[in-house]
Image 1 (cartoon, rainbow, N blue to C red):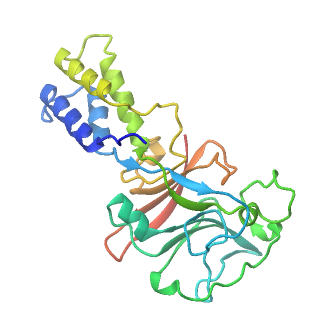
Image 2: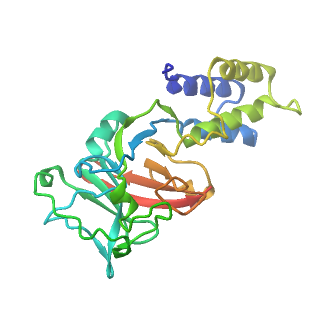
Image 3: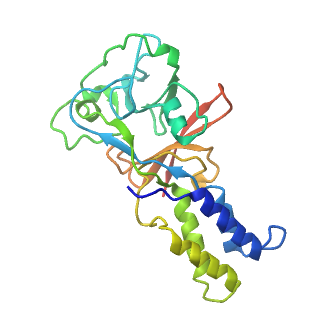
Length: 279
């Protein structure tokens, strides 16, 4: 495993380089404005390691699909005459510790009753209660957006092969990172000679010293992000993003879009929301 890049130091260096050539109190070309804007959004993300081996799972554990924790106080939710499909469950305290920020406590769950899903948080104090059973093993009894075409069984895919989150992969740059890479490359490729040579030389030196993420490499199938995702105009106004899920993975059948789980608030007053946006 390679040594993770110190993105905080890189961001500081790029900011200093830009400010030397274009102080914040003077007019800046639009590419410089875009470049500076992305500097505040660059954070580290961690891809999830998911085990889809057939069999049982820990219903109090981290899951990307699978039978989530339920109890008499927190029963399996319904959507009309069907049960909600379980999509996601994560331990907020454990994930917040890795991200070094407060994202709340308890088990955050995402269920599918509609396009963006139903989110609830099970308090830590409620997790010692007896786990209630799975309401049905027939896939048709659930409000589902997952395609089970590759399974011969009538049982839901998430019940046959639950997605156990077993750990985190090597950290990489979240979605804003390749926007930063793209903006730096745009300035370096200065075909019209509009930028100071000193700025070009310093940015070239920075790019050569690190391995920026490849814009074509869709690493962030799963990731934990600290800043706002910056893929599209629809996503620009999202609250801070906790988790992103590429929907062309096995979880969702909605192609070419990304599900974002967002959070906001202060200690003890966290709220969470799910957003779907297209690339």
